[in-house]
Each structure stands twice: as structure tokens, then as C-alpha cells.
Length: 404
Image (cartoon, rainbow, N blue to C red; front, side, top):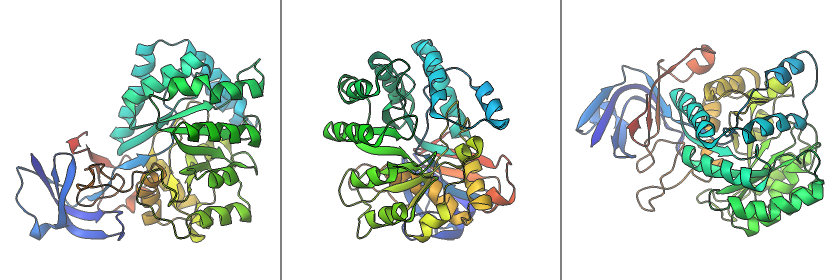
């Protein structure tokens, strides 16, 4: 079954050539993009969709979320808005609520959050464990995550549970807990930050997870200068996320990780470390916005992600992140959209793949890539920042299936 999307006012491909096509058309066949080009040259298809002059983008790729949770942290948010500073310890509140919620309800809650994200144009997303923090609960979170998200990240190293010795808990994260979650996860992450895990503890986690065959990510440099970026680059992590406090050496290290690097496959030594910015979280925690402009100017690929979680960023709106990046972080509309699509795919190692290898790329619109399309109720992507906060998602295709 093929579908022709025609009368597209602006087609922002976010492919390698960064093309923006006018009066364009796209043919979707199965789960793939089969053709794109000028509407006047479009081939016949089994079905058609008239975009009515609207803009079409790749679906958002949200490369950093925490969707497997229960409970509410409104009181913490109100306290923070009244002037209290954010600390990592609030995670414990969610841990208690999550442990006390059954599988059915925890899955239902997560599916509801995924549906909210898809309704706003997100077509590919990662989510993490990290609100279980014991062997049984982390394995349960990973198993549930594998049924609701496209990519699963093991984040047993989110916080040291109250009453546990930090080094003993790190041993657990690197041993029995890792073994229990391994069947469900593709990635591992560590919160390398004051109040969470030290540089040495983070190093142990990254070493163990790499040895277990997981791809690596790092929460780093969120609450102040630290070792997160340095460790991420040293271990060849796919991304380092938050990056609010960066020294010149941090930026140089991230840029150097891409010097001569290829960006064409997952898990190889030929790629560098993406800097993932989480602007909704920055605003909620009243941290300085991550220096996305500085990073891009230095040659560091940037991703934007929602960080959807109950404590510091309870939103899955990637459009909000794009708008913030344009209005407050110095990015152009094209740069912000690229960071929220291709950049997220790059952070997940899913920026390449086509008919030849069978692992279809996401985050860009090109022949052979996965048919993830986001139709805006606007003639151009500029409206995302020009009309901030407006519900501009008109239609969504996810892996070739109309999802909205």
C-alpha cells in the first residue's frame, strides 16, 4: 500500500543535504519513504493525502525521557518556583510511588505519555529506567519500557537509595542489576553529578555496561562543572545530556570527538559524542540554558530532547523545546528542528540505514528511511517559533502508519 502526500508547502528533509523543498510531495510505501521531490513530478500511488500547502518535517526524535514512573511531585515544583534549589534527591519520591504501582497501571501510565508525545509529532523515542533502584524493580521498569518505547536505557545509576552505601550500590548497579536488565536495554546511562554518582563511581558503571555490550550515555554537567563530559568523551558515549555548565576544555573535547569521525553506524569508534540539550528541564530547574549556540559554533552536533519526567520536566512537547531553542538559545529555526529530529537520531545511533541494510534511519526524510512525518498546521516550520505555544501538529505518520 502506497500513499502520496502532495501539495506540501515546505518540506524540511533534515537529510545530509539539509534540503528544504517547496511545492513538494512524498510517497510512503509500507514503513518507508519511497520517493520525494516536486509535486508536479510525483508518481501515482494507491492513496493520496492533500497537505493543503502545509509544512512537513521529520517526526520528532526524543532521545531523552523518563516515562516509567508513578506519583506526583507538584509540591517539589512549587517549592522550586518559590526559590528552593533543585537537587537530585527528589528522585527518591518518585521511586517510592513507582515501586508501589502494579505492572498494569505502570504500563498504562507510560503508554498514555507516549500517546501524548505522538499526538504532538514525536515518532521515535527513548526512555530510561531509574525509578526502581533495586534489582527486581529496575528489571521490571526495563521490561515495561521495552513494550512502550523504541529504545531503552538502563539508568540504575540514577540515585543511591536512602540507607545504602554508595559504593555497595554501585557494585549492585554494575553486577546483578545490570544482568537483570540486560535483556531489555540497548543503552546504559549514569547521573554523574553532585548528589548522585562521583566520577570514580560513574567510571565503574560505564566500564561494566560497556563490557556488557550496552551503548553508553551520560547525564553530565547539569548542576555545575564536573566530570560528565570528560567521561562521556573518554568512553565514546553516544551522548552527554544536560551540559549546562561547560568549560572551554569540555567544548573542545566534544568537538575533538567528531574530528574526522564518521556518523554512519551505531556502536563504532568512528563517531563522536552528541551534546543533548534539555531546555524544558533547564527552565523548570532554573538552571542556565545549555549553550547550544556555542556548541554548534564549535562543531559539536546538538540534540534537543524533552527529558519528560515527573520532577524537573513534566512535558513531552518537543515543539516547546524547539521554540525555546530559537527564542532563548540562539538557534535558527532550521538548526532547532534539526536538533530535535536528526540530532536526536544521531544521539541514538539511528541517523543512518535504508533499504540496503534494513535498519531504517529516523529523524530525516529520504528515500529508504523510515516514514516518520509531521505535518504542521502552518505553511512553514518558522511558525513553531513565530507562534509559540500554539498546537500546530496537524497530522502524524509513524513508520508509515497514520498516527494522528
